[in-house]
Structure formats: C-alpha cells, structure tokens
Length: 97
Image (cartoon, rainbow, N blue to C red; front, side):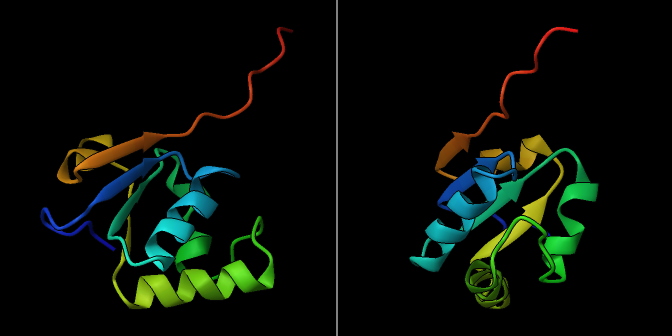
C-alpha cells in the first residue's frame, strides 16, 4: 500500500504495541492515516490481516480500515510529511547490558 498523496490527516510513526492500535483507532473513526514503521518485517503480516499483537476484533478493524483506504502503510519516514498531524510512538527503553 502506498500513502495517499496529501489527503492524510495523521501520520503515526512506529507501528508497535502502541502505534498500530492508535493508527487503527484513528482510521476507524474516519481519519485518513499513514502508518509508518522502518521495519517492514513488522507490518506485512498486518497487511494480510494477521497481526500477532492484535486480538480478533482489532484485526477485523484493520481489514475494514485498509479496505476503505483510510489506513496506508509506509516504511519511509519522509511520507509522514504528507499528513497535517504527526504522532511519534516510541518503544520501551532497553536496559543496558
């Protein structure tokens, strides 16, 4: 999926345990969202509706919002600039080893 050309209202950078549910929630409420993650290995299963971190109900939300084209995915952070608002989600801090 490619991001829409300037019709996105929100970009969510980081599609982990916080970012993906946030992107789904925003898109499910009618906003056009670009979900961005620099690790494409993490989101292609989501593009097939098989996100391991999502329970069945959010998984069907994912299918609904991607079919409606309210959610698009990208691995390019520069695509975030297409939205009017940008949300950055961060993973938990790593403990020093």
